[in-house]
Amino acid sequence: MVDTRRTIHTSPRRVFAVLADGWSYASWVVGAAHIRDVDDGWPAVGTRVHHQVGPWPLHLKDHTTVRAVEPDRLLELDARAWPLGEARIRLELRAVPPDATEVLMVERLTSGPGWLIPDHAQALLLKPRNTEALRRLDDLAVHGSR
Image (cartoon, rainbow, N blue to C red; front, side, top):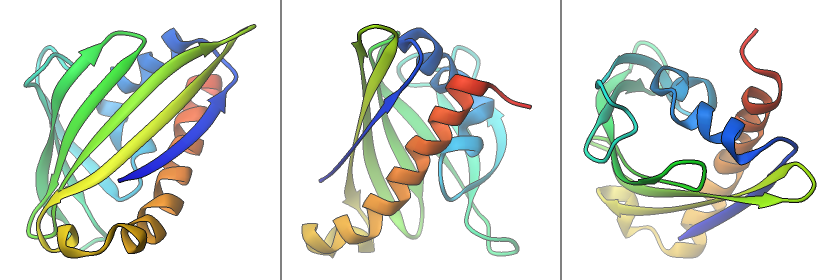
């Protein structure tokens, strides 16, 4: 399991608005290359973002499913990229006065070849990726799309 934190200088509502926009998924998730479709009702439990991951021309078509959601507080996802595997990602949002949000991103590989990698080695691979993902989420939440 890999924990990554970042304080974003805007409200939990604005951070969650980015997470709730399935079409923005590839803008903040490192490795997601293209959004093919977003289920109606995203981010309701069970809805999916249909995406491609990886560099062109080796894109893998797969999806990410919402496991749990509490608007402005929590989004938990199951992300697939077969044949590479699956991961569970939990994003927790906590208001930090006066107008900031602490985001905790917890990721663990749940199946596939990556699941066999020891936790400390997973952390070496996932921590930089998740740090960049939270930096991108910060940019979108604070500045919006341009």
